[in-house]
Length: 145
Image 1 (cartoon, rainbow, N blue to C red):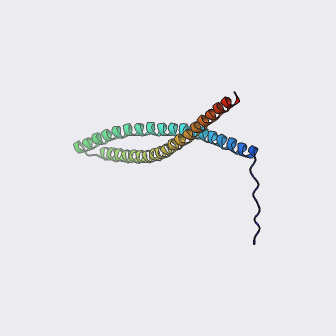
Image 2: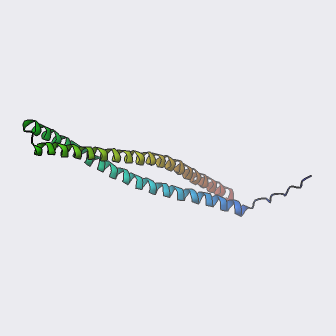
C-alpha cells in the first residue's frame, strides 16, 4: 500500500498574507483598469474628432466635385477635365481615410466596452471585500466590549 504524505495544516499568517495579497492585486487591477479606460477614452475622442474633420472635408470635396463637373459640362477643356480628376482623386482619398478612421474607432470602442465591463466587475469585488472587512471589524469590536 502506498504511503501518502500528509499535507501540513495552513498557518494563520499564510492565510492572512494570501488574503492581503489578493486584495492588493484587485486594487492594483482596478487602478490599471481606470488608467486603461482613461487612455482608451482619450483615443476614442481623438478618433471621433478626426472622423468629424474628415466628414466635413468630404462634404466640401463633394461640392468641389459637383462644381468641377458643372464647369466641365459648360466648357470642356483640359483644365476642367484635370480639375474633375483631381476632385475625384481627393474625394476617394478622403473616403479611404474615413473608412480607416471609422474602423480604428470601432476597434477602440469594442476594447473600451470590454474594459468598462471588467472595471465594473473588479470594482464590485473591491467594494464587496471592503464592506465585508468593515462588517468583520465591527463584529470584532462588539466581541471585545
